[in-house]
Amino acid sequence: MSAPWKGAYRMPSSTGNHMLDAFSPALRAAIVDAAEPVSLPQSMSLAAVEEPPPYLYFITSGLCSMVISMQDGRTAEVAMCGKDGLVGSLSLFGPQCCAAAAFMQIAGEGLRIPRRAAETWFAQSAEFRCRVLTWAQMAWNVSLQTSACGLLHDAESRLSRWLLMSADRTESNRLYLTQEFLAEMLGTQRTTIATVASSLKRKGLIEYVRGDVTILNRPGLTDVACECYQVARKGIALLYRV
Image 1 (cartoon, rainbow, N blue to C red):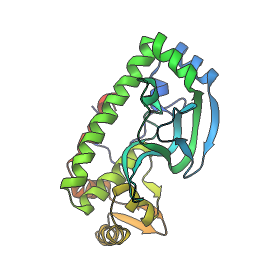
Image 2: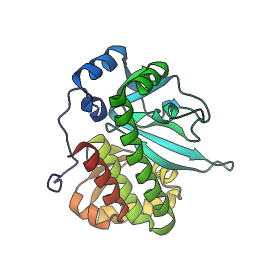
Image 3: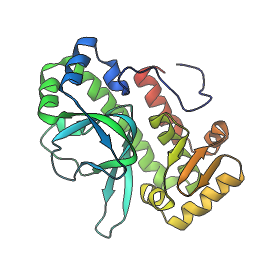
């Protein structure tokens, strides 16, 4: 594993997506040949609840959130995917549809492939299947950890953890996120986000102006973040050996 990152990590990439880069040249070329480059504006839906997605997405920039919505309208993020994985991969594992909606949290771009093509690769290519399952295992472990995080850790450490995870997956210390959006992702009140963000700003850890968040002091923010960030960071590091 590499030395601690001085900033958001940046891995060498030929396609912009690290899972896609990890495939053998022949498989990667076949996937890219079947893929369609697409723009992914903020709030764009990539997968609906209880519906098999027509496309799966290799995100090359931006960030996607998987979100659970309750009957009373409250929402909370249960997983995220950026340049590290494949959005919609759960649809390859069996007949049950995902209970979470997937949408772009931070605008970006990506390569989309028809789900039917992905199903064929998943069934016929051990390489494709192994890589997707390994990423899904990592994402599942992070989701388990952050579920406990939401119950046991305070808002400041959770927000710090979430900002760092988002920065890792976008490979940028600058994020465009409103207080309302952050509150929805963390399942808390907007006033709580405002209070916590102001505290982090006073400590010189972030700059936050009208939905524009910049991480100024990554080591300091890491110190404030709960232990759950290290679980998420280790998962990515082991997955791609960064």
